[in-house]
Amino acid sequence: MDVAAATPGGGSVRVFIVDDHSIVRHGLTMYLSVAGDIEVVGEAADGAEAVARVADLLAAGRAPDVALVDLLLPGLDGIGVAAALRELPSPPRVMILSSFGDVEHLRKALLAGVSGYLLKSAPAEAIADAVHAVHAGKLYLDPALSATLTQAVSPSGMAVSLTVREREVVALVAKGRSNRDIASALYISERTARTHVSHLLGKLGLKSRIQLAIWAHANGFPLAPPEELAPAGC
Figure (tube, rainbow, N blue to C red):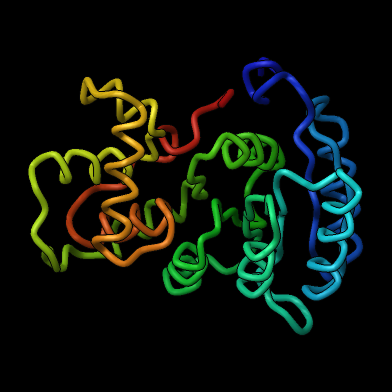
C-alpha cells in the first residue's frame, strides 16, 4: 500500500482505540503501530473515558482522525460515544468494532452517523484498510455485513419525489462516491455536487451522507460492493 496515497498529505493517521478488554486494545495498538502510517494516540476502556480523553487530545492539538470503538462498553456504549464525539469541534470519524453482525446493530450504528463497521472476526489486515478508508471519508462496511444488509433491506418506495438529477446524486452517494467523484460523473462542479448533497440531506431530513446512503439503499438504490466502498489503498 502506498502510504502517501493512503493518507491525505502523506502524514500519519491518528487513531484512538476504545475497548473494555485490555488484550484487545493492546493487540490493536501493536498491529496498527507497525502499519507505518498509523499512529495510535490514545485508548480508553469505557465510553465516558473515551470522550474525555479525545477532548483532552483535541485541546492539546493531537486530536485523533479515527476512533475505533467497541459497540458494547461499560456505561456509554459505542453508539453513545459516536454521538458524544460528534459534538466536539473537529471530531474524529468513528468506526465500530463489534462481534455483532446482525442488521439491527448495523443499522443503528450507521444511522448514528458512524463511518464504518468492522467485525472483530475480520482478518488483521482489514483493520488498516478500514482505518484508511474511513479517514478518506468513505463508508467502510465489513464485506460480510455489506452482503447481509443487501439481502435484508427491501425497497420501501420513495417517501418523497426526487428529480432525475437528485436520483443520480443519491445513487452515487449510495455507492460511497465523494463530491469530487460525483462532479466528475455528472459533469458538474464539485461545489454544485456539494450543494446537491446538502439539499438532499435537508429535503429528506437526514444529518449525514452516511444516513443518505442507507436511506438510498432502503429505497431501492444498491449500496456498492465492499471493494468500491473501501478500495485497497484508499
